[in-house]
Each structure stands twice: as C-alpha cells, then as structure tokens.
Image (cartoon, rainbow, N blue to C red):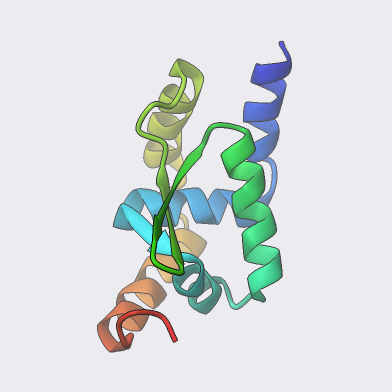
Length: 115
C-alpha cells in the first residue's frame, strides 16, 4: 500500500508531472535542460527529481560531472500503466505542448555539455 501511495503522490505535483512528460518526450535530460524549460532553480528541479527517483519513476546516469535523468526502464507495473494514462490524457495539455516546444528550442541552441 505504501508503494502505491508514494507512486501516486509523485504525480500529484504539477512540476513532477511536467518533468515526467518531458522525460517521456525526450528520453533523457540533465537538470540544466529541465531548469531552462521549467524556469525553476537547480535546487527545486533537483528536489523534484530526487522525489521521482525515490518513487521509482526515474533513473539517473552519471557522465563525468553531469547527471542525466530518464524514465525508469524497470518501473513497476503501476508506473508503466500510469504512464500510458498520462500519454493519453496529459500529453496534449497546453502546458505539456508548451514545455515540449520550449525544450526543442532550448536543445537546438544548447551548448554541449551544459554550461
């Protein structure tokens, strides 16, 4: 029961929901990518990513000093089913569309790696 509650609670915050949708759209992003799109400070984005990691939504990969986040490849059944529902019902919301457009624009001009 605790796992179910934690999994669902992770979706109750609009910022975490936006992060999940962005990771779904792009596959893998670093904190600086998410900061640029969400227009939030690093500490806020990192706090939400840590919450998503604890609730089995995201995986982390280190590349040098950079941390990259992606949706968990080994998510529980609940997360996989909830992601399907999110794709159906949330992917076309104005906020999700705006976030994806902002991400595309940011990535197009982004120096590599993050600065």
